[in-house]
Length: 525
Image (cartoon, rainbow, N blue to C red; front, side):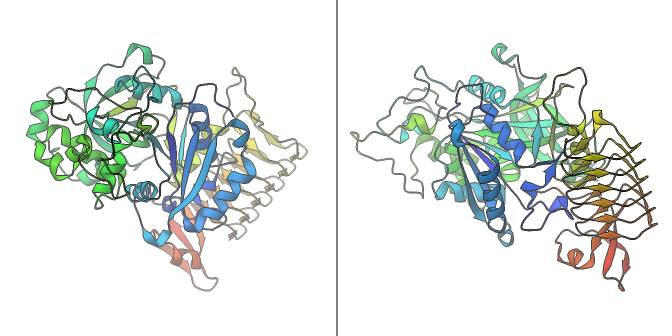
């Protein structure tokens, strides 16, 4: 879908990880995490559409080597970027066995020349109705991002954007995990910010707080701690700071080009979320020696040469379009010390705003069902029940809260409510489904009852089975008349191969299968 807004002039980077938190539905080379269907659309569809609507004219999709072919095929076969003037490239930055973090992947992209301007990082598992161009607007206004020439005027030196003119900071987005759709045990962050006033010209953004990020850490690391440790130096400089413990990092980061140099300068930093952003935030309120130790002052003043070959001592007559590389410039006097740019945090909390990281099986189920719902009072182009599906005599399918794909067959007297059925799903006579997601080719035999279940591709649920809150892996066959609650059905071979397997609660060595308890999954980037 073409953007209705002008190009915002920098790159979008979509990170596609392995998806260990979505086991047992990820792992196959032809179905990586980024292509796992959410409400009958590949997961990657949502961040790509978000970037298109935001006005990005260049998108870099960073994948694992094992998943590159499948993702590249999807991009070429299902999306029409050239007709929209949108450039997109998919590159393999690492492999599964490399076990690299988000900062590692960005470092590789920078060194290979794939990233050459200010950029926005978006995870492939992001689903949100928050408009991207509004976030870009907030970033530019708060950071005073544009000069009168809109950042396009040619500069004589590479250092013009980084040192002589000063640099601007970034913007991260976090969302509230409480309220509707809250998942027990969901990962959250402890976030400290110094409040700032949201500009009037950004009033179209959903209600929420804006502040300078001071520090963030996972609340998991604070389990069992009776008191939250606060640094005196941070409290002295920001006595009015606010703490948030129910918000989670959305993975959306708007960052200037110099941050790539900072990442390259500090190879021990592996994670954007756990290392890079917290250290940049701390550098503003801790002793200036910290910034010098991290090489930040040299980067901000343009006195450090990048390992990618940037040379700040180019001849004065040689011109570089630094404006096209970075729109974030702050004028300062030549004798003024370099100011460390702020990392801003936007924490929306409006009820109308939906945002989720779909990186666990619980969030996968919830988000799929949320997207299947429709408001009868609002116009929509969404096809709820595909014309190519077959609905049997006296069968009941509630169109307002279901999504039924092509070639689906619903048998006579079956009842399907609040569910998503993928391509070629078969529902037997008299079967009942409530709040379930069935992926392509799955089968539910006659008179089976499923509630709150996620069923993988081509899995079969035997006749008269009664399952509640269960997960059934791809190609698995659940014996008829099986009764289970909160269990996971996977092939034993797949269980051994998984790196994030949970404790096995029941094994059957005769048929080579295992049943797991449905514990909370660990998050992955």
